[in-house]
Length: 487
Image (cartoon, rainbow, N blue to C red; front, side, top):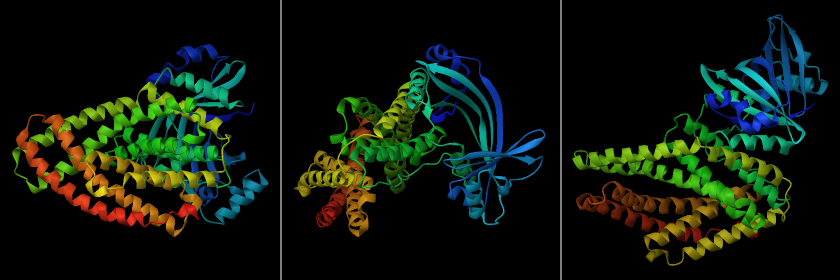
């Protein structure tokens, strides 16, 4: 039976130990598990010619022989090597794959890039008569003296929805994380020293001829890639940047659901929106405390280094930040978070073939809508109250995310100019928001301290006045930015 890998979930060692005793899994077992150990070394040239050409080359060591495996997106073949022998492209048994590999390497020497060592147990399941293979892997990937240990379960099936059914049942029982990268991507990341690092948002590749639902799927998967990367960095102890980028990823997902709302069924998206709002409510305060502790108070204390009450305030703020950090870690190790991710993956699998208007026309309308809302919100900016400025900032953020989502469809100098104007407005309003947020956070930890409130208010007021002047100038530049989608 040719089974396709559908979804891979990370879980704790404790959950893995009790995996087959979980009620939904136990009821679907149809036979005894098969066990094996898989240790392999992956090879490439110094400039990673094979990887860049879409080919993975590995060698598995055995007692009497070595097995070379060459794989692309469509072909996977193995060949036997002599004991102790290194990789040999000439022994790739598929003629086309062999020719591609030889051309890519072009005589360059190959060397080990990373190693994998995994103990695997494959369990046969059947859900409503449909076979599903559940594979539990416990092992590690190593490169550059760095080791990524993992425990994960993978589901394979000819019927994709059957595999998602099993994955969802498991995610409803124990906390899991969706692992969006395979061994190859994770191994190369380790080889580059990119182990659990904060990840910025990447550009989205789109085609204007797609329908809007397919465009939404591409955009949201791009957001999920950023979310998963920063989730891993945060779980590994990543600092303020991982927290910041994780919140950005959550906001981008919310912005994607909002930008495409006219072509998405509300009854199917309501739960996802609620889960994203929940995550935002967890990571928003944590990021606010980060800014307050590491930027606002740090700057203020550098100006008044001998102020004892500021030192005490900083200590209290760090304690509040610690509580927010605990809440965030609990959220990302909860059943709710894992179940949200699995259900979203399953829904996106169905959404990939969805319908809707042509993406290019839809994007132009969506950009025009966001732009109109922002310009309407920005009228009378000079005299706007703080809560009104916050509304303008949110409108600018939504317009910016939409412009970034659809940038691949328009490109050009005008697009870059528009985005640059939006970023500058958002940054200017963000400085004002940080000052207002600092007031609120200070009142949380020192609600009755009028002397400290007066001291900080004077500094906050100066920042707000300076930022307001900058924002007014930036807004005038934005008003002159071309509406490039109208071309």
